[in-house]
Image 1 (cartoon, rainbow, N blue to C red):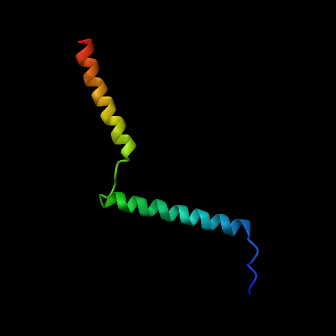
Image 2 (image 1 turned 180 degrees about the vertical axis):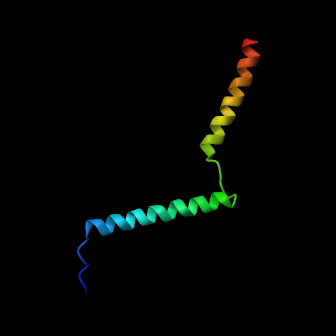
Image 3 (image 1 turned 30 degrees about the horizontal axis):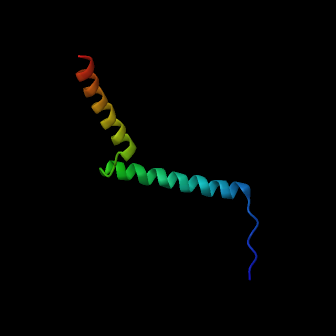
Length: 61
């Protein structure tokens, strides 16, 4: 069995940074292709605000 090589902080950090950059690149590419989706909680919040606004107009008008 081969013992693992000692972890060099700079190398591990670089790997994390590279993974993060790749995730960001992939997300940007998806968005450019039109695969962007709005999170469900944002849609629910928008709906609640619209319904609340309509109810406020009805009640206070």
